[in-house]
Length: 144
Ligand code: DQA
Image (cartoon, rainbow, N blue to C red; front, side, top):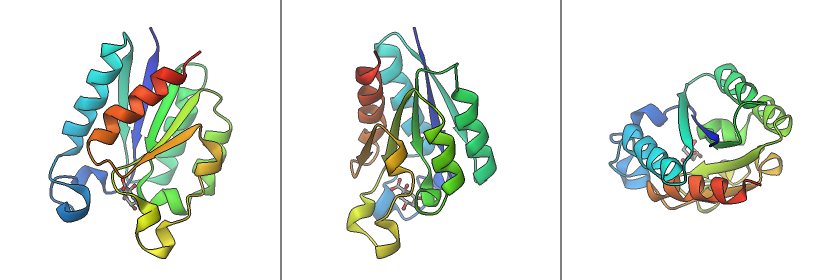
């Protein structure tokens, strides 16, 4: 049995009421519940960390080293700016899935570049709440 760490970045606590035309009306709790159900269906456990703060997200990635088999991370807007998060992910050698509810590649110019993308195993984007299940299934499927 492995531990999958789901990490949620800034403003994702507002899911449900935040720009529902883009992010839907489901809450972060709904999304985490789907991720947990997917992990447990494969006999694994899921932990969740949410923070608005960049350093907290770096701490969360570091906490996975040697402890969690996979990290699923929706870094929010830090996706596009955080070299610290990219470095933390590069230093983590488990399976890493970058996750987005929306498809940033189809949105504003500044969202089209992910600085963490080169440091992850793969990305799930554009599938809304279903992405949480898909990302966990991708992570679990990639475990050795
Ligand atoms: C997001 C996309 C980011 O560009 C944005 O800053 C977010 C949410 C998504 O899940 O679609 O906060 O990561």
